[in-house]
Image 1 (spheres, rainbow, N blue to C red):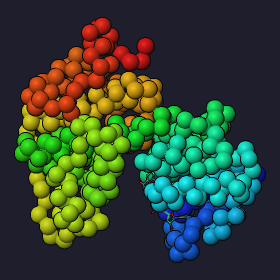
Image 2 (cartoon, rainbow, N blue to C red; image 1 turned 135 degrees about the horizontal axis):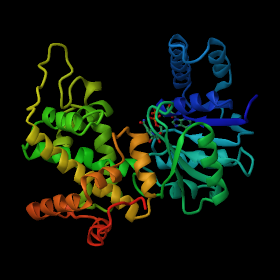
Image 3 (cartoon, rainbow, N blue to C red; image 1 turned 120 degrees about the vertical axis):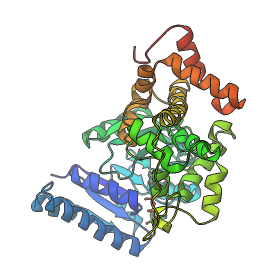
Image 4 (cartoon, protein in one colour; image 1 turned 135 degrees about the vertical axis):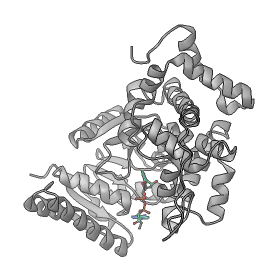
Length: 389
Ligand code: NAI
């Protein structure tokens, strides 16, 4: 039995994934895209996904057929009429999203929920395009959406509480891990994860170690699933730089988020990563493989520097009320597969140790970038060991 109609606008990487989740959870789904070509590609890609799921025995052939038949691929936005939820996942452009939200609002019932999957725009700015901004909020899925459980649920300052609880309940019923986040740049994950890239780039820039060694340290000693340079090459250095620049600007140029010249030059040179054949690593046929300097003492130093910065950022998210301690740890483990929640990690390491690492970095470099968070200082001063009490 259908659980009601859900519409997804934009049939790209994210829209397609969200449509798959909604249809799997027994909703009738309308996917709308202005490009016929994009719709065709999305439909055939999703058919391939289900063919693989059937092959692996994860979905029965009958279920696969039923799920796919619940999705309609449309170019007319009017088809969203009757939806209880509309999620937009179109290009990351504020004016496009604002115009779209206004059109959706005039098509659906007054109490249906309108959500944006934006990763960098403010929900307030999207919601203010609508007559009733109360029902607009952010539902930020992670790529690949069907596999990563985290959904950041972001109320704008004008969003209404009843819509927020409806959204949280719905995400839970879809088997997702919803975490509420304040409408601030990068929300939780894209803010807290910045030092994973930024500090690693700084270490590279200073010549402390090469990218293969930094990746090795974070994977082998830190147990991160991927190293920062491998990951930037996978995401695309152009995209990663853009996110960093957006967060830097949105934080009124706070030096904690300053982009790196190394990364900028890579992008200028067209070294985008896997998609262009070359990034920090060379993916072309026959290219030499970079070997790390597997020196455990050096690796430990690298890990501690990056980790201290990550933990400081996670604490800042709590200090600034972006989310709860549980929220920040859940977000980093369920959205970007960190091996441990950063606050738990900090507690295991010892909050005093984290603070002294940051203090010595700040003293050595004299840069504001390394300033320890006031909440960390307060906890250490008061002898408190955990954020979860
Ligand atoms: P994409 O570029 O793969 O797909 C966007 C789709 O929107 C295209 O098919 C385009 O034809 C369509 N479109 C553009 N304007 C439209 C309109 N007015 N009406 C209907 N369709 C329209 O983009 P992607 O990567 O799926 O991203 C979509 C949104 O999700 C963006 O806001 C992005 O910031 C966000 N996001 C992306 C993630 C990622 O890893 N790609 C992760 C989380 C969020």
